[in-house]
Image (cartoon, rainbow, N blue to C red; front, side, top):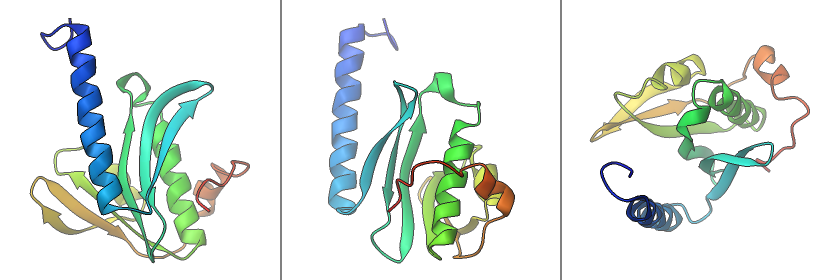
Length: 145
């Protein structure tokens, strides 16, 4: 049982929710990318992002709960911010007001820029990013081209 329902029913509900959300993202961000976050050969999360305009739009980033708190999301965000800084691009994202990841976003140079219901809009200006952050992503393939 999952959340009080049979596993098959929970899986069907999750698949339906993913399909609806994926369709929404594709309609609103037609040039956005959908990437699977992997650790070795395991799929551990997802990333929707759009680099097509003059602002990098971080649409959605999610890790499976078993992989949260291990620094994976932090390293991924540092890589994205580093690449945006290298390309002299501003960044934008929405985050729920009660999400503790907001502290990380502030550390990475994001600042509040508005709100939309339960979401805070955060922007990061096109500015350099420190060398320490760059060192954490050297040698990675560049998926942001």
